[in-house]
Length: 402
Image 1: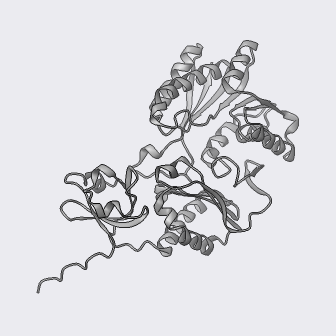
Image 2 (image 1 turned 60 degrees about the vertical axis):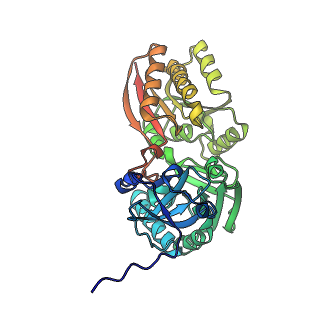
């Protein structure tokens, strides 16, 4: 007997143009808008619709989120073209992500979910004990908000869930910005415990979700070099690198940033952790401060420069490379012979090799020799999808200079 024909899918079906299925077959999770065979009904689908995608031959490629208004038109959720995308699906992915973090960390302070790296494209969740801060950066995840909240409640019973939906990525998906408490009651005090220091966190008003977990392991490496050192932390924000160094025994730490609120929080953290006596706060623009220090002959045993992204779009690429070169040149001049320099870039549009080359040019222009001790990126709670190497946005280099 002949097998019955497969049941017709209840979800919209999209077709790829001929020859545009190779990346998907190789494992890439995205479909770009110019790879689809468009029709008027497709353009009328709501952003975030769950769809089935097929190759031009009719071979199923899986279940995807679809957004007709985005350059990244579809993001794969599952290779099964009929996978149920519901509360159970979300809970299973979050449970898997939580199990990984439980093997990596002894305490519940980490990135719990990192978008495609954890199989939930566009969903970022940071965990601060029993407070969860979520960013829904794709229309699909925005549409699944109720299911996400239910899954989080069942798995973690959080005191509060906060939405930090104010990233540039949402604009690309046609989504409005929003910051709100979605569930529970936000405690008056939210902290991150790291390296023996309790850092206060502002989930509603701080940068990103309130903390930069991606640099945690880099802070560990830098703090391990800080005992007895004179430390300069430029672009310090709320002082994570510098205060970790102070807690590790640095003789003196200078925290520098142009944000008065960030410096006020850094000073509060230093006082609360008994570190204020060895911490100096300087409100200053980074390049100007480094130039003044060079003119004054100021030298430090350890200099940290962790700036915000210099390249926020492709058009910023060239100026960003020059900026990183200049930063490396000025920062190197502030490092004492035998001292250490840590430089980082969180610019998506600057590749790791380009950043390293800019740093090398800066060192040469400063007339400094040295050696690279470590090239690194974000910690393992920021897993990278194997076919999205460009999502490994954080680049960092640790050097010793002669």
